[in-house]
Image (cartoon, rainbow over all chains, first blue to last red):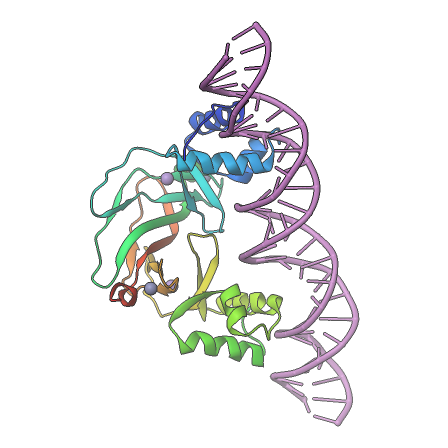
Length: 127
Length: 127
DNA sequence: CAACTAATGCGACTATGTTGCAATAATAAA
DNA sequence: TTTATTATTGCAACATAGTCGCATTAGTTG
Ligand SMILES: [Mn+2]
Ligand SMILES: [Mn+2]
Ligand SMILES: [Zn+2]
Ligand SMILES: [Zn+2]
């Protein structure tokens, strides 16, 4: 798969991700677009951008799929993953820098890992 | 909150959790009940059992809420959490024993943490 | 037993996400 | 530039997970 055509909608969505370092759900994105893009299109573009390796996705604790720009990451035999954090005050979701490595455990082969944290973000703490 | 009345439905659901150490979603539970309990009742009982501290819940990577019996766990200032694991072959979801402690980070106050792992479980690996 | 009210079933509803299809627009070919 | 090709879009209908109001049922208490 991958991006075949560079459309206006695709550029619009990419710009939103580039203009902030937040992670966004399809619905949050849809709201920021002031509903000027069809809901299906938003979902399809997010999927395409993930297939293409430009975005990555993860599930929030509320069972909502979030997307964020993919940073280059280490690859090796072990599974790598960075945590995601949601502030319980301002609700912002962000990728945390710190990479976590999951060593192969004795009794199971780990292939994918997700760490999701909730709490108070720095800017909400200092208010 | 908490359990006020010990009903048949409640016992039925608790028995299913006690008879295996799996984690289950509302729908998986509904299927195991051979649809002999109303869907809303399943959701409501899961919520009640969680409020009462008998079950705990977490989100799977597919954005589905899973429940499992709550084991007694350490409490201290730090946030404690055990990982959850889903086998990509047999789809079983289980709680892992190992506790993970999240120390308070410099720039944010962590209040809740979730680790979700996917891969091959022991019994699927040895086949 | 009767009285009280939590729990249940039912149906309608919300939120999130998916899909088929005809129309549109990005790209390639002429 | 114009035309042809087909990926992308909007739309509507659908799917799945979960919630809620309300009348009925069934634990619990005395
Ligand atoms: Mn991330
Ligand atoms: Mn668990
Ligand atoms: Zn915040
Ligand atoms: Zn397995």
